[in-house]
Image 1 (cartoon, rainbow, N blue to C red):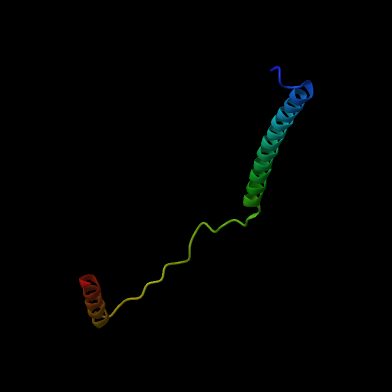
Image 2 (cartoon, rainbow, N blue to C red):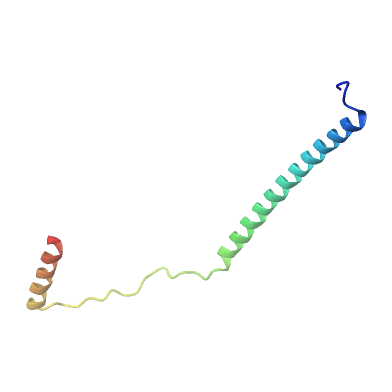
Length: 82
């Protein structure tokens, strides 16, 4: 302990350092616990969602006439030229 520092100053500084370390540890524990609890809530929310259908709707298709096929081919040519 330096000569120019009183016992009360030294004890005060020691107390402040200990309080700061305790606060930091407490904050870290609270944040970690909050992260774990939030992850548990997200995991539970995933189970609460309804199940998705595994198959999609039936495919629909339409037969084009020869005139419609020519028009479609012309449209594709015009769009590909741009």
